[in-house]
Amino acid sequence: MTQTTDPKTSDELAARAADSGAGATANFRQSGKTGSAQVDPERVALLAGSLIKAANDLVREHGVSYDEYNALKSWLISVGEDGEWPLFLDVWLEHSVEEVNTSHRKGSKGTIEGPYYVPGAPEQDSPATIPMREDEPGTPLVFAGQVRDVDGTPLSNAVVDLWHADANGFYSQFAPGLDQWNLRVRVRTDADGRYEINTVQPAPYQIPTDGACGKLIAAAGWHAWRPAHLHVKVEAPDHETLTAQLYFPGDAHNDDDIASAVKPELLLDVAESEGKNSTEYDFVLDPVR
Ligand code: MBD
Ligand code: FE
Image (cartoon, rainbow, N blue to C red; front, side):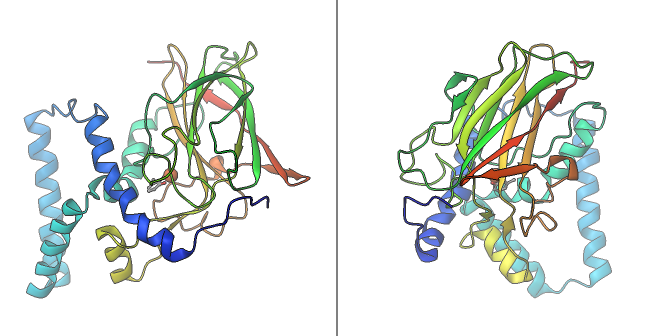
């Protein structure tokens, strides 16, 4: 692996990690997604009622003690104080929401967006090079493929919006010291619907261990890892936007992702030659219904 910047010690990494989870709260508030939460009162009563009933059933079934009840109360308070609600929800709930909302699709499988997407990355024509530091650590990766409609037509007016962690597991805008758009780019496909993006291989991602989510993971004896992944949103006029993540063969956590977001269709086929990796992945989009 080409390493031109020293990897940080694990202490340095852990000290900065909780910032990422907290940054996701500010990111969500700015996302514009909060304003659309105009939910039908009947649905609120149904869904909130079901959730409360499920929690009461669990208390009876497992004989929850007052110590456990107070531990829960204290932990829920700290999730908010640590700004980790987006992290908690995207890790442990979004996968079901994604499943329910994309089950009608005939095109490519997608998966969760997660807490670290930021709209508005710089746009480039294909072939493109993602914004990165001069001494960006990590193995170079050429990520290429074609975007098509479900009927096979290449989509020349598509955009592949790519964002991912660096070789230390950090996302720009959610960790200090990284340029705003480091490892974030929007790439327009060419006349044949093809895209090609030069980037670097991301590292596996560890959920911040020093916030409320990390405390739950430690208290339960779980592990905090997601496998290394590339995040994408693939957009084209008159097509449903595909939100996906792509994973690398052989990653130790492909089979036990803490966010339950790995699907077999999302595994890349990576070829290595002279210290450089390359992979081809095609995206098939559903027309808007
Ligand atoms: C991530 O990078 C991520 O993709 C998800 C889903 C949750 C936490 C961190
Ligand atoms: Fe991620």
